[in-house]
Image 1: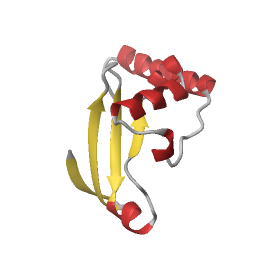
Image 2: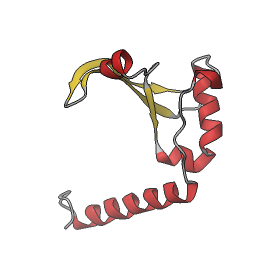
Image 3: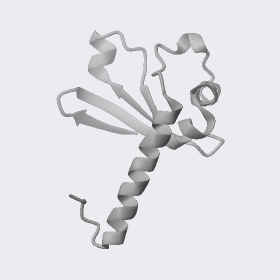
Image 4: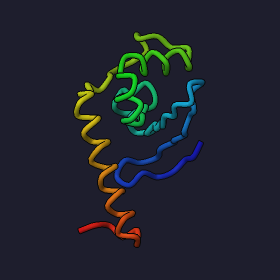
Length: 109
C-alpha cells in the first residue's frame, strides 16, 4: 500500500490487488472523502479489457467474493457500455501499434 498526497484531493492510500482469477484491480481511498463526504471505503478501478471480457456484474461479484462483501456494501457501480469499452480498447491498441511502428516511442501527433 502506498500513502501519498493526491494533488487537489488530499491524503490518499492506494494498492493493486490480484484476484484468484488473475485479474487485477486498483483500490484508492481518499481521507477527505471518508471524513467529509461520507465515503465508506476505497474506489475500485479495473481494467476495461476485463469488463469487455466478462462484463460488469460477474466482475463485481468476483471482487465482492474476494473481499467477503455483499452488494449491500457497495455504494455505486459505474454504468458500463460494453461496446464502448471494446472501442476504447481498440483505440488504444491502434495508437500503441502506430507508435511502435514509428519506432521511437514518442507520442504521435
